[in-house]
Each structure stands twice: as C-alpha cells, then as structure tokens.
Length: 435
Image (cartoon, rainbow, N blue to C red; front, side):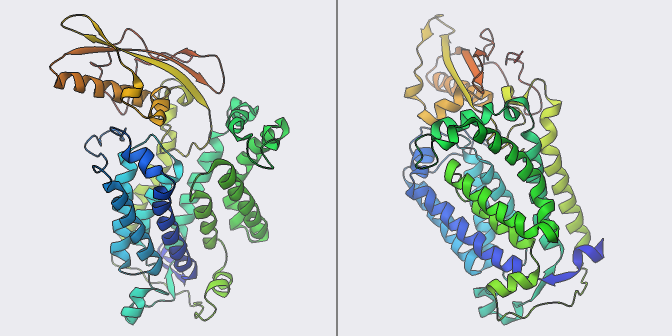
C-alpha cells in the first residue's frame, strides 16, 4: 500500500489543475455577482433556508455579501497564481463552506463537489511549481508528488459518476419522461430548442447519460480508449453547460481529465521547459498512517452517503430524504401547491399567510416541493408569531406532482407542524405515503 500511495510521480497534472481550479473558483465567485445570483439568492430574501443545524448561518446584512464573494474571488486568483497557497486555499474553502451551508434554495451538485475539492486542495502540494510561492522561496520547488495526490481525484470522480449513473436507472428516466419534462423549458433555445423536444432525443439523452456516467472513468483509465473518452467528455460537458447552465461544473469536470493522461503529455502541452520526473522514488512520510486513516474514513463516508435513502421509508423522489449529498443530478421534475393555515391558539382564529410576503419566487418553489423547506418555514412562522406574543398551531395543505404525474396530497393536514421536531436520521411521518 505504501509503495502505491507514496511512490512519487511527475506533478505536472496537479500544477495545471491548480491553475484551472483557481481560475474557476474566481469565475464562480465573480460570476455569481454579475449574473445577479448573489442579489437574488442571498441579498433579496428576508432569510435563507440554511442546511439543517446551521440556523445561525445567515447572509451578511445589506450588500456585504458582494464583498464576501469578491474576497472569495481574490482567494481563487491567489490559488491560481500559487501565492500563500495553503492559506489561500483554506480561506476559499472556509468561505465556500459558509455560503454552501448558508442556503439550499439553489442547491446544485457542483456546489457540493466544489466544497469537497476545496478542502482536498488545501492538503495537496499544488504550489510546488509555477507559483509565486516558489519564486519567493525556490526551496519549495518540486517536480514530483506522491501518487495518492492523483488517485484521490480519480476515486472521488469514480464515486460521483457511478452514483450519478445508478440514480438514473429508474422508470421515469428509462422511458424518457423525466428528460422530456426537463427539456420543456428549453424550446426557446436557438438552433437546438426544437431538437430537444423530440422523443428520440429524450431517449438519447437518457441512455447516453447512464452510459457516460457509468463508463467514463474506466474508459479514461484505459489507455486505448482514453482519447475517445476525452472527446466524449468534451461533447457531454459542453452540451450540459449550454443546455442546463450549471456554472463551472462542466469545465471543472474537463479539468479533471488531466489526471488520466500520462505526465509527458501534460508536460508537453503546458510546461515544455519543465523537467519531466521519471524516478518513481518512494518517500513514506511520518504522517502516512494519519493520512491513510483520514482519507479512508472520508471515502467510506462518500460511498455511504448516497446509499442512505435505501434505508429511509418511501421513495427518495417523493420524500427528498437522502437526496442531497448523493450525486442525484438532474433526475426529476417536481411541482406543487401549498397553503399554510396558522391558527391563533388563544382565539382559535386563522391568521392569513401569503407566501409573497415572506419568500422569493425561488424559495416558494422549494417550499412547495421539499419537506425540509416546509418544516423550516413553519418554524419561521412559529417564531415570528411567538415574538409577537401569539402562540400558534400550523397546518399545511400540500399537493405534489413528480415527473408530471397526477398531484397527490403530500403533507398530513391534521399534523401541527409547529409542534413537530426535525430528525435528520428518521423519516418524517407527517409526510403522506407516495402510494
């Protein structure tokens, strides 16, 4: 094991990845400002729906979230140029973790992946070449890195893509209906809008998605198919970028391909003057046991999290329980309607609630379709009225449609959600069954 993990290999792929990674972190940060994402998601709302357990984590007041994202962008540039690399990478990782757990109305798997990668990058010797740090301190310069620095990316990607492939193997995806619904609002796209409405295209997207996600890592690892797999990756990720507008994720995925090509190819493309490392020296560090245990636990968790919905009552498409952190990407279309009935316990009168008075349109879409949002908004209402000296009961009338199927009642209307406690590890019994 030590021979495999700590054998030194050329570090060109990691150095180039650091440059791309830092650039993408910068573009993600400043892009969120210029596209209006920060304003619409973090500034305009009265409050954000944070991850459970992070109730204390809310956006900075006023326009300070712009400064927050500008600072993250600066950290991205510092990572790219390799200046104070460890601190810059840690700074970005902590700030990205903050904004990630701060809100989930705009949940996206690439946000989660970036969260994981940010902390992994802190641990990697990605500043040992072509960096400001090396210019300031030439003793840092290295031409090699331990083999585990490459395989940590490959294993992480294998987990991501494999679970993404498996998650697509369910009836609504296999018959093309889920894809059809996802494509409905793409009809206005120039050139391809009409094409994306065709049944044969829905089947092509559905089955090519399963095959690509399931096979891309083995095909990139196998030298005879590597070049063709890379071409397929370019098409697949650029298609996703154009159709789904999912930020930096497609380009980050393409940057990962660096770790599958041999060092000489990467070096010849990006660092022609760099000495190619070929010694394969084995250097086992004193902290090797901690490193192996740490990454062992990390990858066990990564493999376990996407399986948890199998141990939760009812289907994840209905309950959403076990959906996040599981690489369940672009899988379904949900719509719903909801009404909150707030009753003054002292007078038994109903207090009218208009969602527009509390939530943005994006937040309302989540409140209509996701149980944790329903519960959190109920608790917000409870706290609001308690602050005014009014004790209330809160009942919800909710109907949900998954993948265009007929709407069904979602929440038990007789349960007072003001009295319900949230349990991360148990099924919410106030949700009505899907069947």
